[in-house]
Length: 307
Image 1 (cartoon, rainbow, N blue to C red):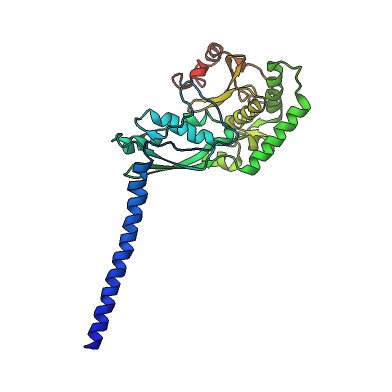
Image 2 (cartoon, rainbow, N blue to C red):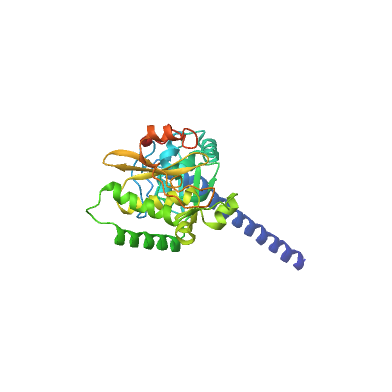
């Protein structure tokens, strides 16, 4: 009889423990996934920018409103998140935005949206890949895997700062300042013809400025990043323009935007000789399309400054 009482008592203790355990789990779930998102919706969300923040563009702008109310809001929200340089950020759907969960998944799965935005931010803030987690309650968490490590940023900054110190002075014109680094890149870099796949590109770092400056080999992404970082250091407003197959620079000089394609000004020759051209140096949109209507045929509805 005494044994039955003990067993019954232990059984009741186990049940109470299980109830408390699951009650705590349910409470935490409701708090984190239901109550917290509801409380956050409609309230300002702070974001901290690093020193490589860009300003607003015609197509996207920095925002303080991370309460998504419609599909178009994702442009400014994702631009701000990526432009800030953060590694992780969480925002929420508006309570009234019923299709938000489905829409954000559609947005991030598009081949163009985040890729285009990636070209409108500083190369150091650009991403290698992004992980987006969306709950059924409208909590959206972004985790960004950036292209450049801190060590790579420090190296590139040091190299370009030394170039500026030794080659640039205040008496030079805008054109001469930009031409100096354009020519330096072309004269000291070979197009990396060994890159055939995405895996090759990532392994060889030929797609970024670090690989260009260390290995003196690059594909168009490396040429473009190096020039973009240089232009930023000198205070020129600029961004990168891309098609599905190619990328180059766009820079603002005294209120007018010009295209620069260092990759195409450093052509691969049949005999292996090194050539320096200025065919794609500070040219207008009309001239760009006249010279090459194919590989430079960018999305004019997105890169509005380039029109």
